[in-house]
Image (cartoon, rainbow, N blue to C red; front, side, top):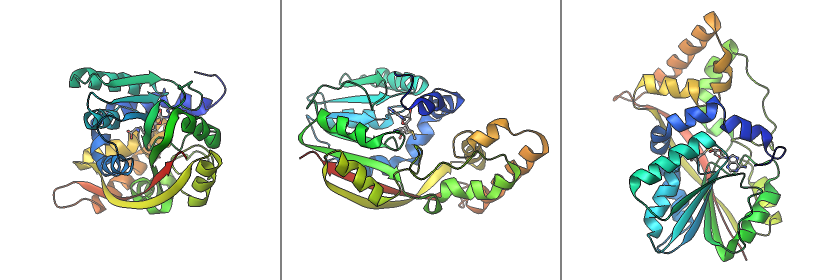
Amino acid sequence: MTDNVNKGQIEFWNSDHGNAWARYGEIIDIMFAEITDAVLDAAEITVGDKVLDLGCGNGGTTLAIAGKVTNIGSVTGIDISAPMLERAQEGADQSGLSNVTFLLGDASIYPFAERSFDAMVSRLGAMFFEHPENTFRRMASALNYGGRIALGVWRGPRENMWAMAPVSAAKEFLKMPPRPGPEDPGPFSFADPERVRGILGGAGLSDIKLNPLDFQIPLGRTLEEALNFVVEMGPLSIPFATATGESRRRAVDAVIRVLEENSNDDGIVLLAGACWIITARTP
Ligand SMILES: C[S@@+](CC[C@H](N)C(=O)[O-])C[C@H]1O[C@@H](n2cnc3c(N)ncnc32)[C@H](O)[C@@H]1O
């Protein structure tokens, strides 16, 4: 991996935050199951396809693709996070699937062979590049002619209450990091359709479409699980990592209140999630 491009993201996803994502792999796949289904459908994944899973993380989507393409096809997952890829490899070993490869590397500079994939997908992994247009230009050259791209990305923070309801409740008690600019690498950097069209169009892709996906995200099967998720994984994970004493206690109480307000009769915490399912093709 390089020491200058996407350096901040490489550090972040290999820190305690990456370790937390690796630990929560199973819960993440439950939370984001609707995005997985929507992305795989949009990419029209079928038997025999060769597929690239961009920012594959713990490999949940990669293994789902491996089952769909069968042994006639194959899937490659690439990610910069060593702890998450370790978990992904364990999952592949346990599944017995032989058509899966995981690569540790920065997708924006990885030397993929030209025209080596039929489709490229990503569940929530496309928004973290410093130079997205360059990245997608390289991705496009790794796709066959007429190759399909399908990306699940977040729409704006105001529509994503799973992230923002806990932030609104607890931010007054925590030392929040500076808010990233709308085009800085981060979860909401593909929220603006015009920006997305500019990036993908600038990379030479065509038939660019953005379809909304709205769903309720189960933040945890119990209040405790949901609280752990908010403290270790969501946008509050950075301020919670350094919060101590009375301010931490008040922030935790504020988060618990908002989670209780959004628990259903079975105790499952459900909050709104809002994505774009983006599709595009190589000409
Ligand atoms: C929000 S997580 C999503 C992970 C996984 N796709 C999922 O849905 O569970 C974003 C992922 O993108 C990866 N990522 C960020 N920048 C990357 C890059 N330049 N190349 C490859 N992966 C990257 C991170 O390491 C992380 O695993």
